[in-house]
Structures are given as C-alpha cells and as structure tokens.
Image (tube, rainbow, N blue to C red; front, side, top):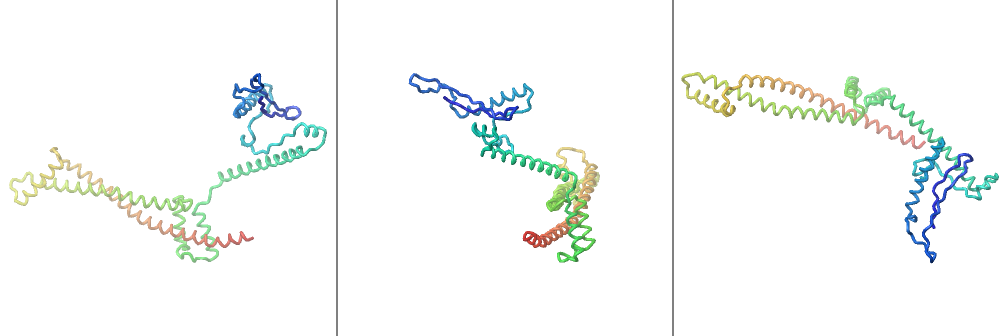
Length: 324
C-alpha cells in the first residue's frame, strides 16, 4: 500500500486547512506479499500527482468564480518571501477552536505577524526603489568638469595651491574645464578614452599620408618623364645627352603604359593636384592635433594630480568619520 498527501487547500468559508490523501494498493499475492506491477512507489510520482491535483483544483476554482488559487510548490520554490506556517494537527486545531491557545497556534500567529512585517517592508523597499529610479531618470549625474570645478572652487576659498600653481591659474583652469565640457567627458575613463582617440587619430593620419606620399612621388616622376618625352619627340637632331634623356623617358613611359599609346598626362596632373590638396589638409590636421594632444596630456596630468591630492586629503576625514 502506498499513500501520498497531494496538497493543502484552505477552505474558502472558514479558512480551515483541507487535505487530500490518495491511497494506492499494490496487487497482493496469496502469500500476502505485495508485487509491484506499477511505478506508484517512485518518488517522482508524488510531484507529478501534486502538480496535476493543483491544476485540477485551480480549474474548478476558476469555473465556480473563485479568485483563490493553490500551488503544490513551496514558497521558496515559488520565489515568495514568506514564512510558511506549521501544520496544527487534529488535537491542536480542536483546542484552538475552543479558544485554547496552543504552542503551534502561537507559533503560527507569530509567523503571520512576521509575514505581515515582511510584506510591509517589501512594499517600502519597492516604493523606495521606484523613487530612486525616478530620481536617477530626472537628475543628470555630475560630470568630471563639475567635480573638478567644485574642488578648485573649494581650494580657492581655502587658499590651497600646493598641487600645482598652474592648475589654479584662471586661464589654465578655464581651459581645462572647457576641454572637459566640450568633449562631454563624464569621468576619468572618458578622459582617458578621449586622449587615446586623439592619439589614434594621429596614427590614422600618418597611415593615410604614407600611400598619398608614395602616389605623389610616382605621379611626379610620370609627369617629369612625359614632359621630357614630348620635349624631344619632335626634334630632328638630338644631342647625345638629349638622346639619352629621350630614350630613358620613352622606355620608362612604355613600361608605365603597358601597351597603351595615349599618355594620360592631364589626368596625372589633375590627380597630383587633388592629392597635394588632400595631403595639405591632412598635414594641417596633424599639426593641429599634435598641439591638441600636447594640451590634452597637460590637462589629463592636471586632473590626475587634482584627484590624487583630493583623495589623499579625504582619507584622514574618512578615518575620523569611521571613529565617530
């Protein structure tokens, strides 16, 4: 014989706990020994039956218009932050009905009070989290420029300038703050990232200039050899030196044209002008960026110095606060 409790269901009318227990019988032999002809004894079956029983009960509750639902799982498995009450039993339940307090009844009442406090606390936490979320959405976090400006203003009021005299120069301070604000730098990670991107742009310009310089050199030689070729092509009598130049230009252009006859001198010159302008633009940007990188490095170093000094001064204050 095998029995299993399926589920507890609170009576809708009086709140009393109802339990359904199934009793399953094996096939018995003439020698009164049970022979397992089914898999009822397996532990996994109890979980399946409890789940099926809960589903059937909930279907019936819904059918008859009740809002209550049951769940065969524990509070922990359901993810519910609630302490389960203990089972009273027949004797304790009868005593409680007669108004006699029992140990288990008192324990359940304490659990109910605790659960009520937990629900209230959970509601307060949820309300606080909602408020914090709204505050974060409606409040912009202070930028690194705001933080640095606050430190500099406080230091100016306190008359402190031991970190670096240039930092507290109004012109240098304004330049530093303008740089941070213009580049929307929120923190030190953003400042480091900006500095790295500027260095990266420098390398990118250098990478672009190399093929342009190579192509300009090639075009220059093409144009020079074409001019020599056309200069001596129609001349009837050439000196030995002129003949050498003409032959060299002819052979060079023949190799460049690779079987083609019309020399694209006009196209070469147009490309040369275009690449020269592009090279000048990149060079100007590179030189300007070189100065910007130098200035950014100074700003970066100044910011690090300010924050490092601020951290050193804050440590004793924090230690004093902890001792209080």
